[in-house]
Length: 383
Image 1 (cartoon, one colour):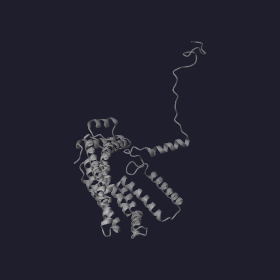
Image 2 (cartoon, one colour):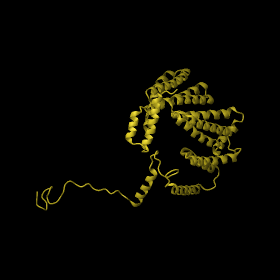
Image 3 (tube, helix red, strand yellow):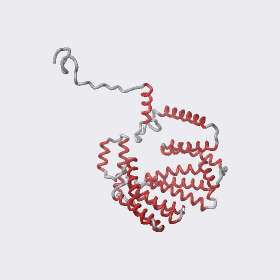
Image 4 (cartoon, helix red, strand yellow):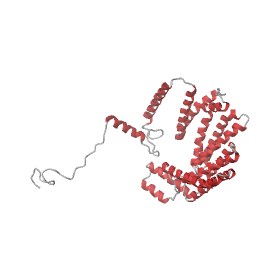
């Protein structure tokens, strides 16, 4: 199923891990270079800017080939629809050729893999005259196939979003009480995806699909929270019924809006899960926004001031408590992140406060003046 040689693909993951160890200073640069020489890998690009540049180049290449063929379909609508399917086939052929040339996550392959799914979605849109359920279902299947074959992480994002849209549209339009049970259906879907991803991670033996399954697990947490967030539920109800009434079970959604982020944060701290902690903190901030959108207890400037004071106090006392910890929760920089920004802040503040400047010792001149020993007649009279 995988388009790449599995040994080369496995070596690519190993080289990536070795690079992370080298950045964290667990291994030396020479050891990393020896690992690269010993492990032949696929052509990958880890620099996001360079990869984005190759992606744009791939888009131009893909659109140029498709544009030449599009000139033949401008005179006939039926032929034009067939050409869009041909564009999807061109993207698939290009993806296969790049995979045979050992390009993996390079930027060029991203353009053709994503372009295939985009072109297929447009072709199905024209063929079905905008049947949303068929369109999202087709894109879901195509994205999953592309991910399984090319181990392409962005395709997993497309798969999850398209699958979510497919389920939401089916529940909303096909079930009798779909509009009322949609939030609960999406909650169940998110829980199911989370449980499935956790089980798959436990049974996973190869590293190829680990990041994709981990992405699904994290997206499921976000979807679960958004499915029961009061702001999201109420605004979707307003768009559905053309007015914004007080939604049924509002107390439940308000409790859900604030309890779930707190649970995320607590579980993240217990299990030392950084990604879950970030999700919980962002969800809690969105919960505050949701409450402020409907209930203005304090003026905005007072609320921001009090919130800033609370965050400052919490951060200050947390840092004082954990800054000397060698294990567990600590304020020391993460070696894998290789970020010394927090430590550099203190240096910059001290330097700016006391106007400290580095002591630079001027280089001594090789020419010794005086007594006429080198540069001409001097006080000694010698030349």
